[in-house]
Image (cartoon, rainbow, N blue to C red; front, side, top):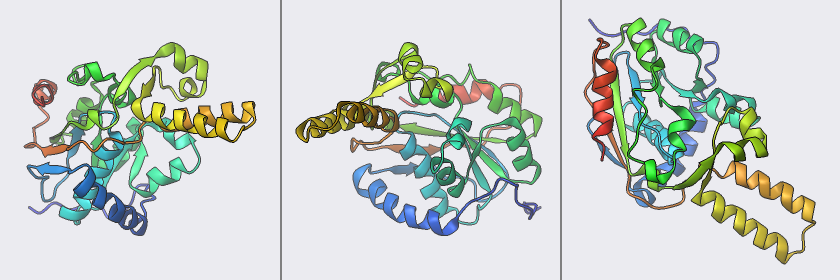
Length: 270
């Protein structure tokens, strides 16, 4: 029997199709020539699924790479939503951006509403904790430490499609991260980023700005304020042209061994 979706849209659906096509025309060039994003396997043609992916410091390439894939190869799948850290929806402009590309707050109530209406959901388990882990831990995943995604799949009897990204952690290496630094900067701590990272992108952009500010003899306090702003907003900027692989795996039924099966796939990325 063909899969059919409830035609009602979730209340939070603020997707902007025109905006998505505009930004994807830009990202498409980057994915093809700069990051050389390679797709392996294929997403199901239709149906309701819970897509689960590993998360790295190349998070923008990962999330937008998937958006690009579904727009290009699965245009019929118009009801796929991406779980996004709820703290981002507290920041003006950033909130509007993620809503426009199909992002939704990562809460249980939002997941229930999407799945009840027949939509599909994309989740990066581990969130910022996984995405912002230091380079020395790039092979480590926390799929057996995060159970929310599996509970969602089992409670809704929905199959899981694992997605693996390889090499995206090298696009913007995380040098280290610190709980103390998060508390000192205050804002990351308020946004529930327990350990604030220092990435290669942050070092390059912040150092470049400070050099520029010193050259023009900028007021010290203004330089400090703008420098901190750049430090906190350049965390995930993908800068290195590392060839990245995106692979779709076969759907897995939501049985009791679901978490173990997915963790085994993630452990075999490298």
